[in-house]
Image 1 (cartoon, rainbow, N blue to C red):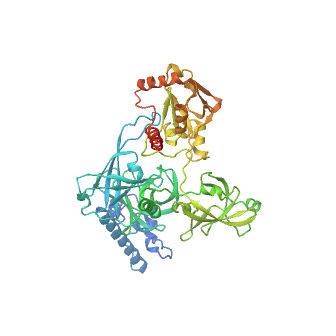
Image 2 (image 1 turned 135 degrees about the horizontal axis):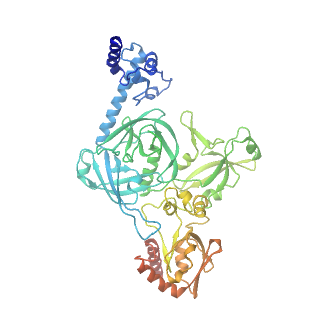
Image 3 (image 1 turned 30 degrees about the vertical axis):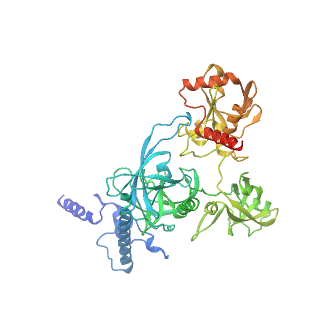
Length: 566
């Protein structure tokens, strides 16, 4: 028994050498003691391959292990370099990273004349050249009031939102106070980090009020779904946790910014995403050159991979040819006038496209060719080489940002609506469908959901107008079950958008007004009686106006133009 206790004490005292071993001893300790750390592969950036790791075999090395080899000396040098890099990142952050306080007030899309209760949110941001603060768009989306606070200061300063890009989830803030800028230093933008390079995410995540630094390494670089803007743009995945409050903070590599923290992977541990520098520069360049956010370009195509050999043979592709098949073209895109269905796109701006739709990216990496398209500036030309009917053609296409038939988001603007005789007409938007809950894809009306996700616009400024609800009154009794149907015609005229519907109703010259809905449903009302009923219904439901602000402004501007012409 005495021998057993002596052995236990010896193991307990030696456990501090390992930092994590507990009694009883495990096979992990024995394996660690007999295993040397893995040698990094030969690479120009091998010094960064293990930077930022604080667990694994490096911490499992016993203190008594020999360190006489040159490899072990290099290993320890790298560890010291990482610690110095993190210290430099913290020093940079102290004079640049700020905490952002936002008061948000989102509209109610089911009752579009009302707002939801205001809520408060917090995020991070950092100073960039030009006395500007860069942060995430979702930190200030639907904002009514924004404050910022710099590190070590109890004071909060009023900030104004100067530009917002919801697709890329970026925003620029400006602070007028001279006191705020005293001692603040801008951060410079760097490059896309290589795989396994270390980054330090700096910000103000939940769980505390002071600045926080989280270390991680780059796991992958590829186009990713941006949750806020529902767009597909390049993103960098890192193994550092990005929690609420981190959003908008910089990911620092060396002494420059490698990206902006913006989202994490739900249900997974320590998987975060940062917006890379090319996307940031594209956003800033558009704002500086045009004075406002210009968006990201799209070809307006739906393409199919040509990985099947029989498919390639069917379209006359030679063995050395690679590309993707054009299956659908947006009628509003310039490509609609240049490309044709069943064209094979072989290259974009001279870069060959593989059969799976990818193009070369850096050293032995690949990325979808959509990234090349998204990095072009609006109204910029692109050279597309296609195979059509067995012949190769080189075509020029002008690239522009394209809007879907059903808007994906409607941040920072009030919803459109028009009320006539208790019939509430609204344009179909995805935020409207989101009012059906988190599982809106399954709980919202199926036909509306399918149209929102699949249909393409046929003309400019086209909208899908729906009858969202019926505010009950004697005049509309019996029509209440026709809610959530699309409106097709007013008095026999096909409608283009909500503004067009409003004009057709208000310019009605017949005794009754007729609305043709989908499923061959019809609503007919006496026009004069309906106008009187509209005022009564608005007063009963405390609705300030039968039209949304944008419709009123459009009507006023049209009247002003007519008056000036007269």
